[in-house]
Length: 183
Image 1 (cartoon, rainbow, N blue to C red):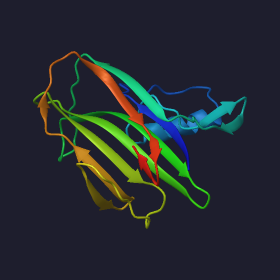
Image 2: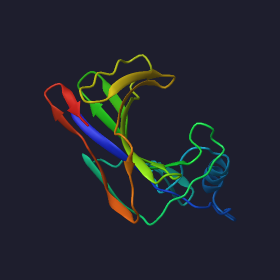
Image 3: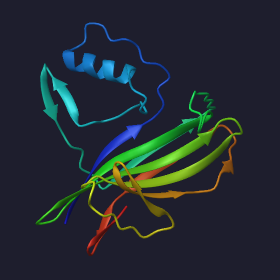
């Protein structure tokens, strides 16, 4: 079984400036970002513009590491469920191939912030991107849930107090053991 991890490293973006005189691809990405409610940040999506020619690429690795250093963080949104929430995430898409099938998983390593009381929780998610109907089997302290995007394994810690500055690493690695993946 062959393993490939594609990294998407997301950090906070304070503001998005308008792009003037940019390529059509950059303009479309800029327009999508301005209209997006999705997380934004530093990322590699496997697409590059080489003098107007779109090129696709894959980062092949078994490990992704992201360093963070947060001096202070404040959040206030119109989200009724989580008005003082923010997150810092390391996300990767893992592709596992065998002789017959391909399996794809989106793994998330998340630090969730509650900025109203300076607390954090750590969350690990594994989304099964192979197929909406493909079952996900996982062993760990989390649970498997059904969602409109398929099955997801979620593990989270209890809330802990946080003191600033706050720095550290988020690490994702993948290995194979017999007939299963270790994420």
